Image 1: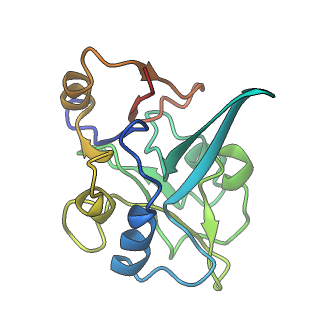
Image 2: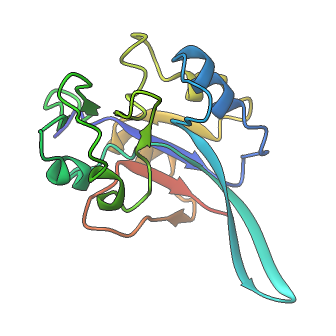
Length: 173
């Protein structure tokens, strides 16, 4: 799929300001307690050699989304034109089977009990605000080919899983 959208995250540029979280929440009018994008801590090593990095987590818009396969009413689908995984709230019955199916724990449930998550800012019709707001350009988006070119020569990390997450991760050298 040549038009697949993907995120790019460079952990060496992230300053943990959480602007990506706030921009997403504000622009998409996400209710209190629900986070479509969140900065998570990643601790590695053993004392006294411990390292802490951060990762800006949102829906990975996977090539093979496990959440869609686990959704009994078929509320979750992958758009063929851009690879964005979307939720049809009219079909969602709030069963929650998508949450354990997602290897990244991304699905969130609102006060109405229905699943919601990042949709690449389709609802507001522009480039994802999380990427626009990142002051250090640690977070951006594009096609996987564009992002791989941008990451050329850098140390890359990967998320394991058969779901084929649509993200390019640059790690500390």
